[in-house]
Length: 285
Length: 325
Image (cartoon, rainbow over the protein chains, first blue to last red):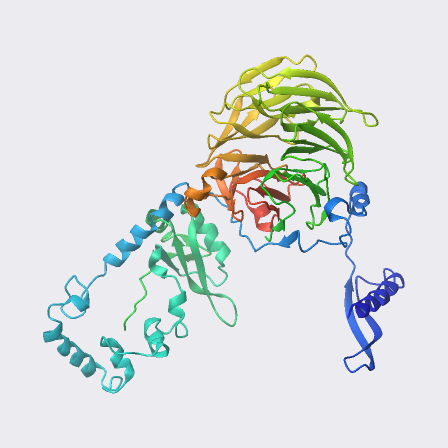
């Protein structure tokens, strides 16, 4: 293949000198012949777009670009050598005041998570403050509540349907059905495994936004209260315009509370913003 | 921002330096071969082979024709930047810790280590362009040993950083100490002047970095971190400071990855407030340097990599609300 590339380069280089300053963008047609796998000569036509980019460089710098390589790099081809120069992964540099407490807050993240999960602990059978599985009335009342459910929605829960079975312990439910229940209607099956629990950080729901609101606007508005973990503006799928609400996650609860105090009822683009803590996502219907 | 990873060294980086125009980047490490790179695309231009010890420091002159390197093999070498030929070698009696060209490149300076019964010395050299260098003066550093030395504005003075955290100013003509202060309690690891040479930044093992006035050595600003600071640089265009550091290499294996904190940190130089972090190195950052245009910076780490970061638009558009355009 190497000679083919060379032939290509040559024609390109020859072309380069011919047209001068005709236009900024131009389409060049390159025609060359090469041998295909069967050994036959084929004519190849390539079209390429050429854009003229002008840069102004210091004279000595331009001079130095022509230097030959030396030392261990002697004999390297022009351009970066793959063995010494690699383009790294994308790095984010988010500029903004970094709260010194963030380091501590991140370490304490585990405790906070505990507190959040502790709050809504409630037995589904007797409404007591323990796990449903530990309920002392599990055997006596469990059947009742189930019959209650089936009377509520008789058309959805015929006894043979696997969805009803998922509630009962010990029975295998294929992940395809499980995922549907766990993640609600938000994503495909099994996705909930990949996602970090969203309730991990204190999240605000901002509503009554204008259509023009962007994530940048929101982060501009809220980052003064503390470091943001996430900033999400719900957008219309077709138009890409804001649907009128956004979710802002902070690292610390205090910052979130501060933001509510300050921004709730604040006039933004002719509208009065409504800011409140987002309700945790409901797992069960 | 996608950094360029330059892997030309097999051991920890000790110093990186841009030339005056910023098109070349010089790096030296504990392996014995300093490298030179094109800074815009990370292409390696060449290496300077000849040292037989860890290279502690390097400096390139203003015309980018001669390179100074100082190494643990008790030599200072002057190289031709293009071609990598060693022009001159000066033998000393202990390791060379720091080297620097004076403005105009007719004088140079090196710091030798206090080892093997030798005193820590400041050597002032005369380095004519077409002749062998000669030693003008050797000055015994009083007090704690010197770790780094740089020439001040118009070669009127030399700023010296010491092992005990003090900074002193020497007169290069007489070799006498003019003034000394002790802003830090740990070793001065790095000392870099601002482009206008009116102030300089220090990096110290006592986990802080300070901005000092170059004339009076008066502390102006202090940047506190929670790990040793190995390197500090001043942005030529913004009121920003970039600090590199991290857990000391010897204690890395005994601490958790998260507490290693090998990020490069950006501070606002007026408000002393941290404004950004860049991750990437797998070990402490030993040296940082800003491109003279201020549009990119490079860091060299204990992991043997140099990372060249061409800063994004978001970096330049960032401003405090009350800051003017």
